[in-house]
Length: 271
Image 1 (tube, rainbow, N blue to C red):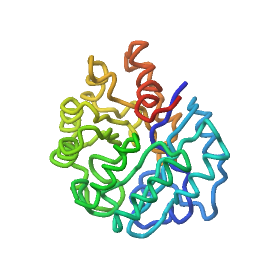
Image 2: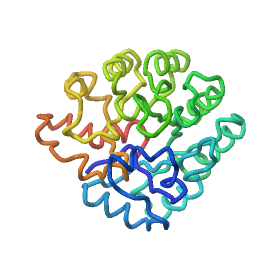
Image 3: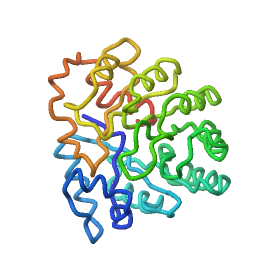
Image 4: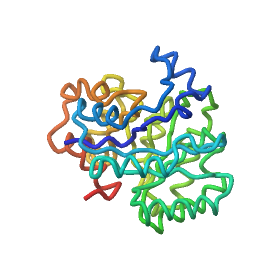
């Protein structure tokens, strides 16, 4: 069994964004012109041995690229397999708080995912703070991206130090899931995860064969084995491709189970 901590079921308005031109150049793929059926995402999960996945909404200055309502509908089509992660309007924090409450209490979403680079605003911006407080109150994690920005937006907001470090100091009860490893500040990301009890890392956007050595070493440590979650970032990387070569990492049975399932189940409160 495996849980994918970061996937999207892309809408055409999401895929066609100009900021993703760099990703299309890397993959050599053209964006689809019509909405993909949910069966395509479920089939990709099946091919990679993924039993459950955290499905993200996307909200940016452009508006809803993947709406919370769309995510809720897809989750309802695949109960037990997909779990929703909300995204909200940062420009109106109280609107965002109300939307987050609705998603968690009424729709059963398991967390909030916000991408500071979308807003070109660091996660220490005051408008994030009501959302952090609401996540703590609701008992759900705040999920974000650390490291450089692959899409055509500035990367500064992805620095683990000072940004994630400061948020964790201000909200020690907040679980922060840091996706994409933090490259080129990976060692900073590991240091922040070591420092703060509730800061964890997911490996989305990296295949197993591209995991930095320092992350693998951290995964095998006594504390690090509880702090790293598998993620693919589908459809940018398919789970099957992301997991290829896992046996070569030399993980013991406990670490492998925690990485693929146990840590995500604990962090997202999955039964």
